[in-house]
Length: 429
Ligand code: SAM
Ligand code: SF4
Image (cartoon, rainbow, N blue to C red; front, top):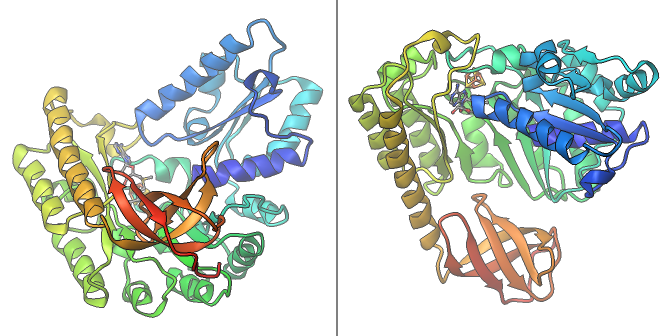
């Protein structure tokens, strides 16, 4: 979602005369679009501002803007801690960035803009063309969260659940396709909680996108298990453009921990969703998020998570050590012993890595369908992704970004596949 927001922030700053530069020292303005999900992310922001400060020690000071969820959570405190920062802008008010820059240039007064104005934001964004021009394009359909998992800052930094109007999303999707997108990734903190006017759900959007002629692939992320309703599950049956992989965070395999986290689902319910999906298509794959070392997690709880991982056989998953976030209910709970937690994380990540590697090895010497996203810099090779999102580096003679090609996989690493596109026959993009 931050990638989508960053692209849109760029679109907005270009309306007041800014262009992107790859030469750091030539920049007049830095926008650091930030994430507040774990503590490490917050500290990285201050380090990055420190680096800009150092680089510009003998040069004219650039305008330094911190946007995103760190700005929302820390607000004025950021400017107090690091006066090199000129402006903080929360994730629901970044549409004002152009006016705020002009205002700063006039008055040279520090700015703190952290209002929740999500309706105003999308109203304005709809008037400014999305210039992503990517083969795989992000499209935000929903923001915020009402679920209040006890570890998570999102309900406080992004605000309550908001679903964008159905017709505006379809219009943006059609524009993205007209400017070259072949894949659309629908985004939301709780993407499957999308509900516009109690009439349109995520399944309605997927069905409508499925009929857009030049669109080839549809994905959505991130989903909450509680909102995996039958109508959405049935899209995997009816919509051939919906890719057969679902990112469905579970966080823990222990019912005790899931309850302490206020996750509103248990392990059995989670498994029942996967069973329903596999009944539709046995080749559907699942990826997930895991938090290790949540307060009160015992070795038995951790083993429940490991058993679940082996039972489901996840691919491409993410795992984190619990990070206490100020203001959330879990932040005041007693932490587990850090060295034990680190060992647990390592065991869990080893298992996830092995599953991923095993999954990739199964492709060796086989053909798989790849959507080419771009040509690699200074190389004759291309980068693309399989239907399951796995990155592929391939050699090919007569293809271009946007083509869907058959690639013979010759080698693999844990994360990526490598291959050759031998046939001249490519699917018309
Ligand atoms: N809405 C999604 C869901 O319900 O699963 C998750 C979105 S959250 C922005 C992304 C991931 O960050 C979570 O799935 C969780 O694993 C991780 N996360 C969130 N808060 C965390 C914390 N305090 N410590 C460690 N990981 C955290
Ligand atoms: Fe955070 Fe997801 Fe829980 Fe909402 S549902 S509080 S975004 S982890």
